[in-house]
Amino acid sequence: MKLKTKLFGQIFSFRDVREVLAKANEEKSGDILAGIASKSAAERVAAKIVLSELTLEDIYANPAVPYEEDEVTRIIYDNLNQSIFKEIQGWTVAGLREFILSNETGSGEIRRVSRGLTGEMVAAVTKLMTNLDLVYGAGKILVTAHCNTTIGVPGCLGVRLQPNHPTDSPEGILSSIREGLSYGIGDALIGLNPVEDSVASTARSLESIYNYVQEWEIPTQVCVLSHVTTQMKAIEQGAPGDLIFQSLAGTQAGNQSFGINVSILREAREIALKYGRGTGPNVMYFETGQGSELSSGSHHGVDQVTLEARCYGLAKQFAPFLVNTVVGFIGPEYLYDARQVIRAGLEDHFMGKLTGVPMGVDACYTNHMKADQNDIENLAVLLSAAGVNYFMGIPMGDDVMLNYQCTGYHDIATLRQMMGLQPLPAFKQWLEKIGLMENNSLTSRAGDASIFSAKGGAARA
Image 1 (cartoon, helix red, strand yellow):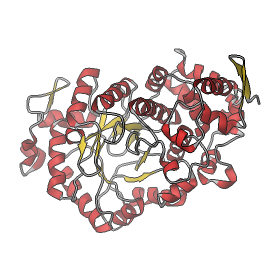
Image 2 (cartoon, helix red, strand yellow):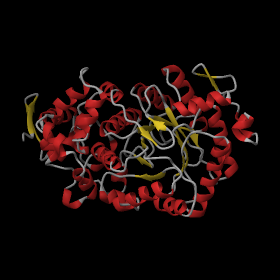
Image 3 (tube, helix red, strand yellow):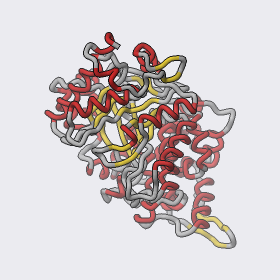
Image 4 (tube, one colour):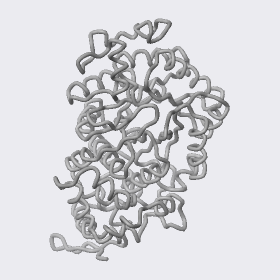
């Protein structure tokens, strides 16, 4: 295994595979904060050259966190398809990139090979790709999943309707839902981030949203994103949830900081399948985001792209219905400006698709970072071209509870129209029945939330 190269008359040597992966990463403020980023553009290019020549076997033999020390490593390695890995173990990382980007390689072939890839391999090939490579590569990969409806259908752009409210007011939540529905939003999920993390509050919000969905016969999924253990108790006690949610990290220590482990996630999925209202078989929802491990001091000196790829490797083990990166939410300490946020969004989407999970992106930013709404709109256009499964839909793109900005109801309507994309099929049929869509476009009734204020639901529309 060669860990050095000569560039511009200078020899660049790297200590191990972990350092090569870190130094080959595009500039991220989180890696700089962790003290593991390349010191110059030349060093970054040298690391990319070394990385391109490493084999997948080299990457496999050097997990970012040792197998004996980390259950995330163990669950990914223990469930890797060894037959497929042995077929490709001699490939270089550059060879894997060429395979993915080749015009002769289709989604099925990439999905098969992905069963033999660890998170570190997925991260490694990502570091060799330009933004356009990431858009093109992700766009080739089809990943679908089914709960009550099917996500990832070609030609469709799903949306999670996020009706957050600063006091968890049921009427405030329903007001946001009504407006979102009137713009064709909510086909991927109606998912609330609650203020209060209690079983009683979670159950109350689930019942309010679920009853409304049932009244209007809306083909979608319902989830309240309290802590996974809170949701488990609420659903076991009869609360009507379709999915169980949890944020993930790429290390065991990072997940412990979230109050979870693999055993809890397994139990959560069992409860969702036994007590949840979703049809299934995909009944889990996960969120991730570059920098979460560093923020909790659980990164083990590993760069944030590699750790993010490990999140998707972990998520894959639980057959999720939805996975998304909340790409600009954690802050400028980890992604400093719009350039870094856009790059991270494209990286995360590609890595999730390559891993084999149904991948969405919360294209977002916080007000204390160097980004604005134009930057997030740029990212949303790129991701739509890349075949992203879903975005978030929030009133005016301004989350009044979490205090961050992302894609609004109007943005999604524009993206669908501009890119020739549709809501998920069952939801589209429902919109046509309600009179909000006709001939693949929103009708003049779109945006009129009063449609959903009448009693009697869909029968009155």
